[in-house]
Length: 321
Image 1 (cartoon, helix red, strand yellow):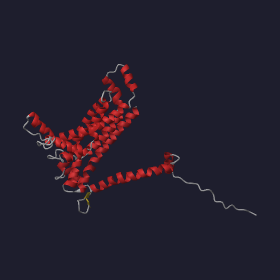
Image 2 (tube, helix red, strand yellow):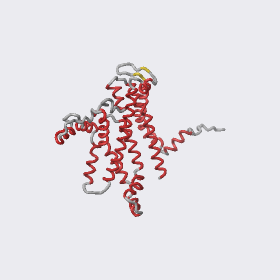
Image 3 (cartoon, one colour):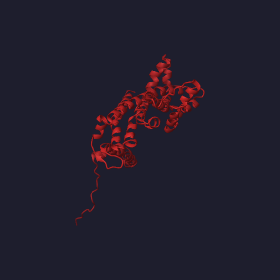
Image 4 (cartoon, helix red, strand yellow):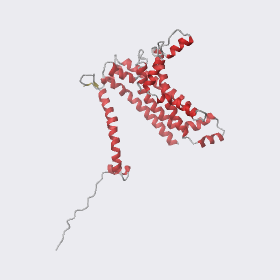
């Protein structure tokens, strides 16, 4: 009597090439890998991608507080770039932002390097000196801004003017924050004072990671202190310099704390950076949220260029190393 098998053929899992590549990339425990990646992807979508896309959409709408939003396309960007009402103010904010960011970052880089070189040497009271020099970075930004607003106040209650009048017999009061020729430089000085310790901290950590044998070999070859700095210290700090400069450039350009507390963009728009302009248009002034959102969107490509250039420079330097 003939018998027939009722056993079904084994099921074979069919994987697409894309799935195969993903599994090969994540390894044997690819399911666990995806389990850990999902929370990160959700955070990126909720906290990064969604606000970014929402900001771009808002910049293409006419949205006033308390009113319905209407789609206007590129009209907000046109108003900022060539409009009679905001064109001059926008291009002034471009100039102010570039000057504020470039000078602040350059001086912080220079002073931070000098501080790191000093703190990298062994001397008595080194720990105390490090704590004192890093104190401005540890202080809350709003406290720093309010303190310097009192120091630079143009009345007799300002600390600098009080010292000038009481101890040096000066009769005129310097308007650090009310004089258009001094206001921007005053804000830049405060930003440098508060941000330089970050550079020093990053550079000091990079210096301590450089093997001491490299300095010993350079000294045996007869290299001077300056040549050792150029040939050993700077190449060893290349990645730290690029990363620190990139982060500081983005933070400085996007910061509104010092400008808002010290001058609020004045006098005569002398300190009107683009974050302050966006705040003035969207909240403090006409409350045009769509037009305010267009301001950072216009500056976004500039940050992308800076990030790409610095990242390529760092990767090319690592490749040569």
